[in-house]
View 1: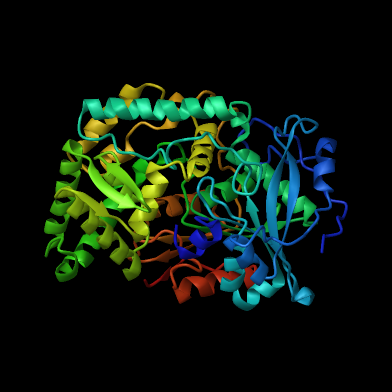
View 2: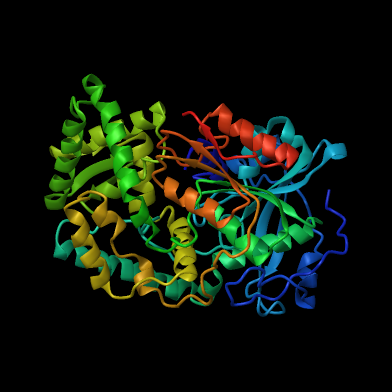
Length: 520
């Protein structure tokens, strides 16, 4: 997550409702528009009158403070837990809104999503409103914490970690320990939240979006989504065709590849990003001492991983000592590769230098980015975030249940991809998830105009995903940033070409006549 959205995540007057077309009860098909139609059962949700009030929840609420400065107001909106039973149990969504000030030229509401899965998006409205410049004055910019995320009805499986992402390690014993670890995470979710797990899905979040659209009094809604948010936006266009206005999908996912094993599609992109970072670091060997060539820097990393396989590294941060083995080191590196700008590359170099010192023995103090990633990975501080991310992935698409499927993939990947192969192909909680997905994955059949933004070196959602989504949506246009190893571009990368093209589209509603390329 890059700075704008990281800040938005905080790690991370009510509209008069017109008579709006109602939406159908949740279907179980995959065809276009299977949620379109009418349903009296949702009328009480669509015609809510939210109580818009201050977003600030206390003196330490940075998200609320940023929203206050931007002029936002916040409210909660009720939605059904189960859209096939709208008269049953309800949950709440936390929503923020910065109202349009140029009412004479108002376009409508722009709903923004931070990605994840499970990323808080309430505070994103403040940053996006600023990036939109004068265009933002014509929109109600709306942030929403998706169901079970952030200030919405919560879900927490009480994990001892904030992420399930681990490498399989160096041998069979390590793999078996990882399988047991992933099983434990899944069982914790079954015990803590088994009754709601079937409804922690992208399709249900898309249905929530349509309730929010109706509550805001909009016949159509505009949308900006990053990363996983591009998948969510794509699902919305399929469930509710014709209800979107201007759609921007930044860091796009091929919806056909979306699954709990999606990371396997990004191995090559992450290795290229690591090599480019190693080139950068080698030119600064006097500062970091990690090697004077790409090969030497990568050999230093290999040495760290090999040491951690035999002796856990001791790292101290915030008065706590973390023990890091070879299942964790690759995930620490992966967590820092999505931003190729100099400050982030320096943070990663500092982190690797710290790991290198720890590999030589003794307890080493960790700070900055490394300390944050250690806390998120090896403590329960971010348990809720990791729980929801897994619940969405496992609730959306089934994963293989036999651990041997993963072990074979790990072993097959070792020779070509010794660092990231065992990470990307390792087991995950979905292999042991207590419930199978309630619905089939959404298939893309309906065209939808959209502006897709992608970087050729994106290490999280590889460029091929943006190209694939562009092919599935023939009316879309693709804006490519050549040579950037970066995830999330609009308003984040400082690329005037990207920002200008997105703002022009949001201002006019007209997509470019052809695809476009922006220099890095």
